[in-house]
Image (tube, rainbow, N blue to C red; front, side, top):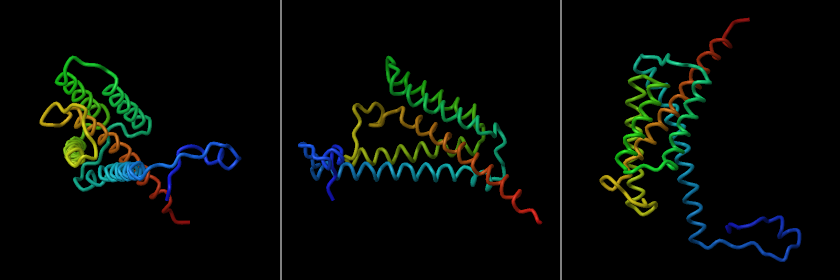
Length: 188
């Protein structure tokens, strides 16, 4: 299977320009990138499903700010933290990492405040950082300049905030399911 750069429509309409054929290494790179994004998407869905299951298993239902507007604000704050991590310049990496850690914990405090949410966020941050390190170690990705034990020290903070955000989405979806199912089970 060949992947083309350019639009097939131009070629089919009789243009002189033929589409450029990707080399085998570019094809493998594209397929590999797609697999990684597919894996990331699946893992985020699992994280979203995991939060309400853990809440139910521990017997402590999450009752703090349970509406969609709060979830959307959480997503917006996460996008803001992620964007700031890419655009704001700091004097040193330690200051940058502390700022991101404070923002991530602030995100948890503002939108979650549960012990299970904090524990899962820390666990997700640890596991995702280990997976990222394995990818870097195997040459799939590389850091421009690792700063602490060959790890970008801000990476766990982003993973923590992302885990909290996906957990809020999952909890909101589970709450919707719990409200809708009992309403439909009425007898006629």
